[in-house]
Image (tube, rainbow, N blue to C red; front, side):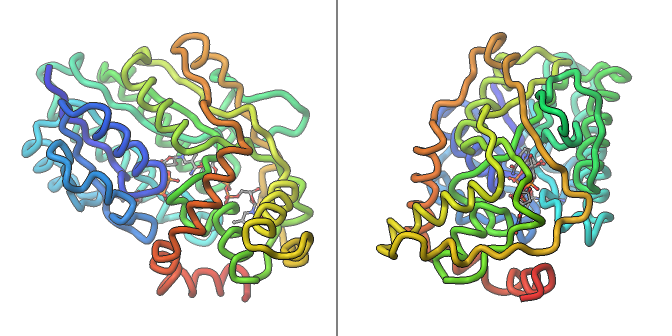
Length: 350
Ligand code: NAD
Ligand code: DAU
C-alpha cells in the first residue's frame, strides 16, 4: 500500500531530522509534517526538503480535532509518527498545564482521530509514539533502564509523557490499534533549541556568558546524536513489532560538569582562545527542582532484535555539533531573539 505518513512535531529538533531522513530515503512515501510552530518549531530546520515533491507541511495544533480530521482526509494518512510535544523540563516546572494540554490531551486527540479515520481497517495502519527515557524516573544505584523498568516519572514533563505512553498502549489494548512506542535518551546535534544544556553552553561560550550548571553538575545523562535517533525511528517504524516498546540510547553517559568542560576545551581550540579561558565561565546555580540524578538506557533489545546501533562516536558527534552552531549564526540569532530573551532572564535571573 502507498504510504502517506503524518509526522507530528516535524519542525522541532528531532522531528526535523526524522522528516529529512524520510523525505530523502523514501521518495515513494508522502511525508506530511504537522506542526503548530511553537517557540520550539522552526521551518528553517527543513530548508533542505521544502521543495521536495513528496513533502507537505500543515500548520496545526494536535489539540484541534476538527483540523486533524481535515488533514487525515486531505492526505489520506496511513501511518503516524508522533513527536509533537512540549519537551523542556524547566518549562514544565513553571507551566505544567501546557504539558498536559499538548502531551496528554493532544496525544489522545490524535489517537482518537487516527482510530476513527482508520476504523474500517485498523490493522493496516501504525501509530508510532516517540517518547523519552525520563518516564522511568531516576537511577540512583547503578543499572540501566530496560523496556520492563516500571514507570516512575518525577517531573511534570515526564509525568505528561508517561501518561501519553499509557494512553497509546491503552488504545492498542482496548481498540486493537497497531501501536509502537520508543523511549530514547538525551539527544544532541544540529537544530537543538538553545534552552537545552549543550546548545545553551555552546551559545554562551561563544558570547562569553556564564554557563549555568544546576547543583554540583553531578547529574548524569546518556547522550545520543540526533541523526542516530532518526535512524532508530526509521528502523522501529519499518521493522518494529506492533505492541512492543524499544529503548534507544547511546551507552554514552556523561556528568553534566564533564560535558560542559569538554565543550569549553573544544570551543577554546576552535575560537583560538587560550586553553582554560572558557572554563572560567562555569557558574554553579540553584539546582532544578526535583532534578533526576541519572538516566542510562540499555538499548540491547533494538540492537539484537532490529539491528540498530549508534553510528557515530560521541567525540565525532560533538565536533559536528559545535561546527554546525559556529557556522549557523543566523539560525542562532533567529531563535534567540524575542521571547527567548525573556525566558532566559526569568529562569536564570540574568
Ligand atoms: P522540540 O521541543 O524541539 O520540538 C517539538 C515540536 O513540536 C516543535 O516543532 C513544536 O512546534 C511542536 N509542537 C509543540 N506543541 C504542539 C502542538 N500542540 N501541536 C503541534 N505541534 C506542536 O522537541 P524535541 O526535542 O524535538 O522532541 C521531540 C519528541 O521526542 C518529543 O515527544 C520528546 O518528548 C521526545 N524526546 C526528546 C528527546 C530529546 O533529547 N530532545 C529525547 C527523547 C524523546
Ligand atoms: O532524557 C531525554 C530527555 O532529555 C528528553 O525527554 C527531554 O525532552 C530533553 O529536554 C532532555 O531532558 P533533560 O532535562 O535531561 O535535558 P536538558 O538539556 O534540559 O538538561 C540536561 C542536564 O543538564 C540536566 O541534568 C539538567 C542540566 N542543566 C540543564 C540546563 C538547561 C544544567 O545544569 N543547566 C542548564 O542551564
